[in-house]
Length: 261
View 1 (cartoon, rainbow, N blue to C red):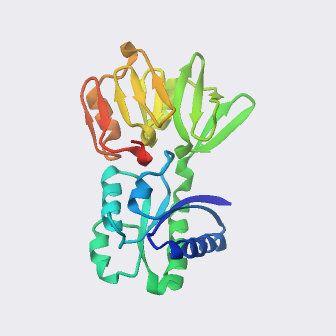
View 2: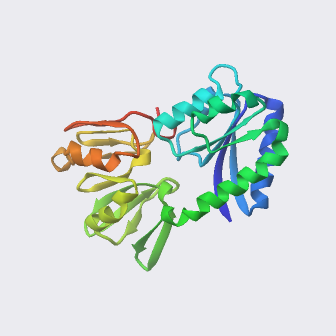
């Protein structure tokens, strides 16, 4: 059964659990296993614990403080892969909401009618390209497959390499050269920040001389002498994925992946 990570953000606390129950039921009917996290405001969503980005965000438009349209626009500018579905009774805001390029719009007044269509379309759209998000690596005694979003970074370790996964405390030993992994994974969003480190760009906060800053609790350090200092090559690899500023010694992503401060 396919797992789907979902965020639901709405300031109406009485409705939030009801909405979550309906969304959960709609995904289950389509054969999926939704993992839904609830947020009562845009501020609460921004303060969420660090982790991989949500696949889908059901987002109310009219909320106190930062409204849903402003939050969606900031997520778009940050380059997060989370798809937004606006969930609102403010049908007069549809045109403004479309400027943020959401995935879809569910009218609260037609919730039970709109929701099944959106869920079905989302799963059909994403399943079509799901194989490209799976990575297979050689282990001793077999093949390990995992989602691209689970891989934080790969660290060189002699003839073998160490794969650090988001959901595992200990690294996985894989049998492949760093050059072979680079050739396979750079086109899929990984950056060779050093001859001994290949990092998933989704998790990078910043790259400085000798250090690649990752989510809280994770940091890979490397000798400055082996760092990849070519700003043009780094820019080429990350162009089109996320806005960033590069020079010879420092690469700063101008956003915080998945809310990392």
